[in-house]
Image (cartoon, rainbow, N blue to C red; front, side, top):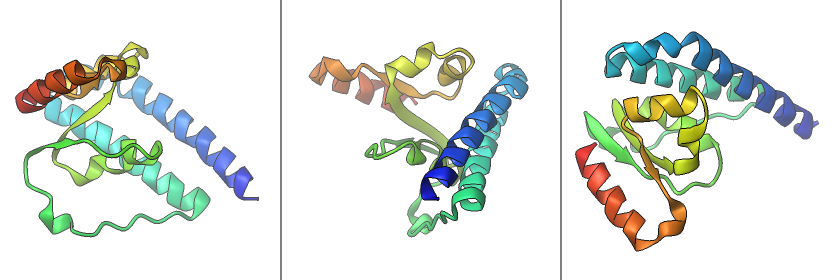
Length: 138
């Protein structure tokens, strides 16, 4: 039955994402901080659904070490989980993400607004230099 809860969660996750993208599209015209809060609301609901459907709980250790203000998040990508679960932990996150996500309608349009840092994963050292420069700017 674990596979069933996983399937249900995946369906709910993507329906939740589409609803937030469509209903939240006016946030594209609001100040960035408002848009980031809407993004964090989506992330929090995704974590909540994960707990309700799958029973997965999230524990944060060392939250007192998270700096206030802007931070760069470059998580070791193990799954989709950290792409949303980490967002509510930071006041003003800028995340590194694969460039292909920029081309997804609605979702990709928000990437510049959130000051996310898209990278071309196949470009090697050149990508690293660009990423460091964009991270400093973010």
